[in-house]
Length: 193
Image (cartoon, rainbow, N blue to C red; front, side, top):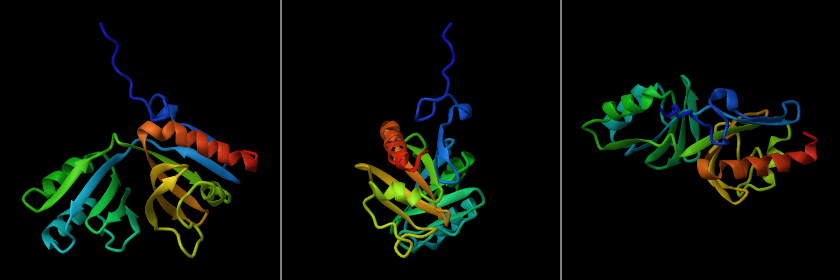
């Protein structure tokens, strides 16, 4: 009889116990975050029925401002384009959102298996990111609540600043997550962590 499959993290660990962390929170720390539901949401924000249906299910007002993310109720909605958001939410939200959008011109696709999520935080986090990030991370240009699709270490990522520590969330395709993890931990070596 075959053994049941064990869920593995993007970095090869088994379940929540296998999540990696590296660094010192007083300087900079990198953490692999548990898998969450990720939903590619597309709708015309001028369509009040679609917008209201999505916002009701998510208990969030979707940002209509380019490059802004909104968070609350255990969810985050990252603005990816004029009619596109990536919603990171509890797993049940994917099904609820699809049902709520039935009959309106909108799309909600579960893309949870596409990306891994890392957190990079601490006073030197911005210095680590600046070594390979393609956007300006100065606080005047990128602040808490801002998000962007960009390149980091020559890899396509979605980046969101979560707070002033500074803290960041990095979404990366699972296939290149081990490479980005190794690149980030190498970039942290300068800070003796």
